[in-house]
Length: 124
Image (cartoon, rainbow, N blue to C red):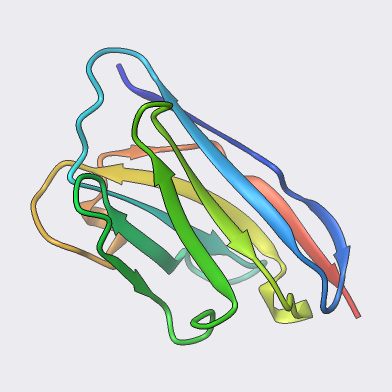
């Protein structure tokens, strides 16, 4: 069974930066795409960014476009979310995910594997 482990969350002031990482382990890991989602208190899990594993095509939520960057290191089976110019509204638990179905997709139900989540708190 593939397992995903996030790291890099924490407390940061508004305007600051954080780098989240997600490492995959287990049997053969060959996703079509990997992604980041987030869930703020009292809200549903929302799409943040996704990248195709082989070709590196990306897509972002409008709320993070220009501030966040998703990338991956295929050899390390790890992907990242570089977050800059953070705002208090970015406060949430961030989850990494991997999906095997073809196509860039922003819907959480289309992802097969999930990490346990890492807290990001942005103070004003």
